[in-house]
Amino acid sequence: MKKLISAFSILLLCACGNEPASEQPIPETAPAPRDLGSVFTDINPDSLYVFSTENTEDKNYKFAGRPLDSSIISIFPYYVRGDERWSTQYFGCYKFALDSSRIALVTRVPGEYVSSSVQLFIYDVQRDSITQQIDLADMWGDAGEFSEQSSCIFYSPEKELKILSYHWSSYDHSVDPETETDTLTEYWDSYLLRGLSKNAVDTLSKDSIEIIKNYPAMLEKMAHRERPVSL
Image 1 (cartoon, rainbow, N blue to C red):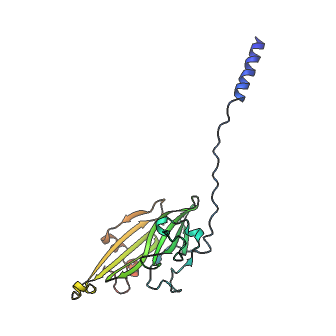
Image 2: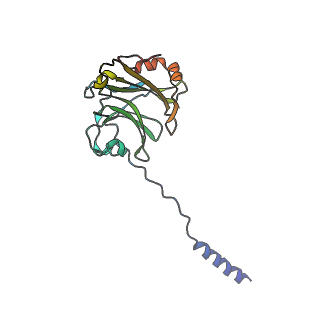
Image 3: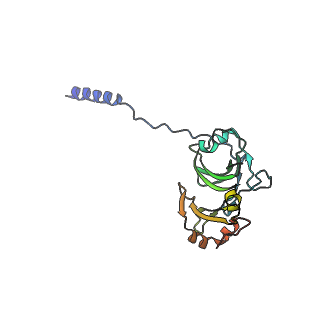
């Protein structure tokens, strides 16, 4: 009987020893962070007013930025860098951390005719890629049409990071040869409030009345220099 028990024990041990080891997940190696500090300046995003200009080559322009090289341009989405992915029209302006893994990059990129568009790109360090893009400012005009957008990034009293954008456009009818005797100039305003504190960019409000009521001073500062916002 003892011999039978011993033999059974030996067989049990052998069976256990032949069981395949449980597979352990292989930890992913985090990509090395890119050298963003050489072109993007650290900034406190609170009350950061973002605007475009007719003279993007002005060295005193707050969002002139520094030229981006191909290693950084390559992380931008294709619809941003387009066919001319190594163009000289991309400039790094400012950066600030959203959390431990996301960095906001304020960047000047090609607009309608020149590098007039200022955008915010959210860079995910772990993925080593841009995950979101937000239009902040731009300016262009052609054949009687004019359009300008500006934004303000700020912290709410609840310490939530938000973006208020104001878009102003106009059309001068006198520029059109068919209506050159028409002296009417039409104007349009639109407003957009977004949140940046969560993983996704949230649209908080498009209600013009509500936004004008809550942020009059901020909108006045963002208004077109030749025509104050109508409050």
